[in-house]
Length: 457
Image 1 (tube, helix red, strand yellow):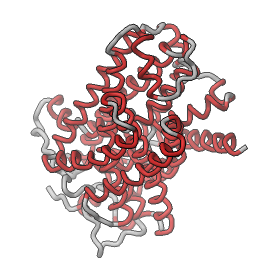
Image 2: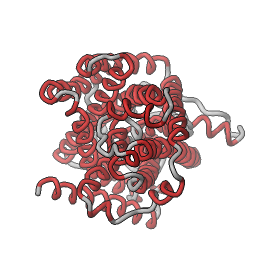
Image 3: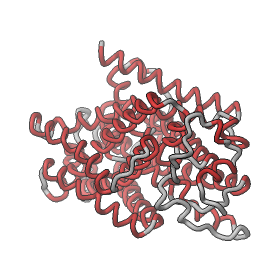
Image 4: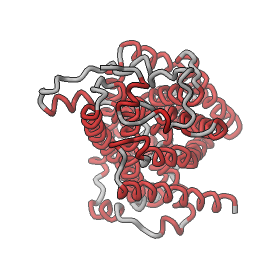
């Protein structure tokens, strides 16, 4: 089995000539070369469950980005202000995420390129520079949410100030380095463990909140009020930005290549199938957690006269007395800390993938992590100094709207590539799936445009 990226790419009928700006003399290397094909698979005749479990992991790493602290800001405000109405937006954005992540995995497995490498090899340099800058902005916005979430959780649990907590969050770079050095499976196990903690914490809170089932069901049905109410639309776009994470499309197309599947037609087909199941199941967990945050906020705040709850600190303070469960607030803070810690890993890997893929620039992982985290800490420090803790919640929500604005820069190239038979060969998506994918992309563009118009005018 050859692990050379050029051989891998040609094995899937993706001839070098169809990638217009490929520069073979420079040699691009494998995506995340230090862990490329490092996870061994079971024998070909092993039971299907054993084969599937070998592919489980990347989907959960991607799912982390769909339940990071940025989701908390949008889901809390959506539930407190508008009850269960925005559950339909969470479901819609999650379905978009399932589709787009499946396409991302398909691209990486079929072509041997992550999305950043594919963009670099297809678009002229000026376009790639623009795409890279958009990706970096998205990562900074995501990292901003992680900084705020971790700092707020530390304040709620241990009384540490937001400013000090933000500075402490810089140290998580070394946690990522330690886990990566142990092996990619250790990294995945750490993430799945923290995701389990988050799910358990919110499962307890949903039970304690005892929301009416009829209201939940109604909330999953789309409402025209979402697009006619500007305040609701602003939060809805934030939910989409927080759920369909643009940099996760780059991440997933890379980390699916950590599996040592056969770089043959049959091997790729099996890898695509299991990777799609992995990400779909993981994102259903993300749907549960995002819906649970909004349901708890709706049950605890919207129906009890606390519709103005917008800050995570307010939610923490009110949850226990309103729900009548003393541990509810602590579970809320523990889940927030787990979410903030977990999402730093995806930011680290996505930043590395994007920088190496677009620029062929490799810098030490700790330097990349500290650079990105430093850019995220700066606005938190400024806002905290000017507005105090009250301005942090709005900054968190605004970061998710920024993420939503970056989505087209990742979604459009992805759909272009996976629907191109010359690049994908036998793994090209069907015309029906292509149409659905473009509908998703157009929906995102239209919603973003409406938000911009409403914000400016």
